[in-house]
Length: 323
Image (tube, rainbow, N blue to C red; front, top):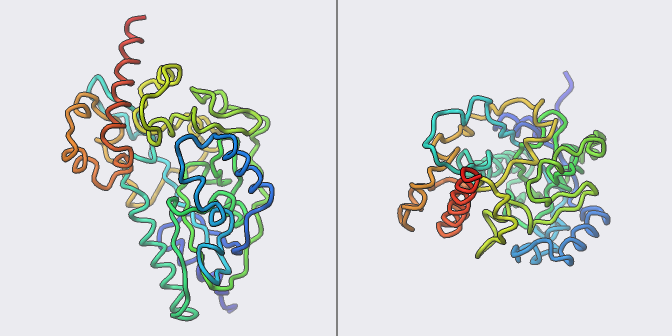
């Protein structure tokens, strides 16, 4: 019987931990074209109030700057597509929509421990002095570019990583490691975005352009989570009933329609977080907000921002009823 390579063992362990896909790339900087696009996007001010995007740019484009001696990056993906029946329960008449990724517990809280388990497995296999860094979204790392290089998919016009079978509803995580691993080749599969355009047409505010350009300042996900202060009326009226995030470009994607439903046990939607009762949200205090959304991504928005979004949702509903 042929023995498994270390890379095969690592991938097998990642899948047994619950991840749906895993790939390996080296710790070299991302491609020059990707760096140029990122820098041009930042210079154009399209990051809006996300000042953190301007910090640690060298770490974002070069994984080796995150960890001295880094040689490899293991990229994992976890499917979060909900069952089609989720969110169909009877709700109070006035509710606000929540992006589907936030229906569950905060993915940072359970993906990080799984990656630490994977790192421990590698340490036992090679050397307990093996060093690593776990990254799940919050670290300054160009994770989608690395995921493509690790063979996990392609970046679509909606700027999401699209896996050939899992679609665009995937959480990404990375393990930057000093282990020298054989890299996978970049993904040869190409999403057929050029002949589709459904995500562009679905975007309520025009944040997405057919030429691939994206302006976060117009994105409802950015507006409902990152943007501080009042939202311009022209954009607020296009938010509809959304109070946290936006799924329009993802749900319009044909690859999302054909993707399998999530099977990971921890990713079970919380019924109370699929749609939010607007009256309840306006009654929340700082203390009750913290307990109500403990362990939820929704907590990231903060009480003031969430209540601002709820008021916009209610105003939009009133305007719809009045016309």
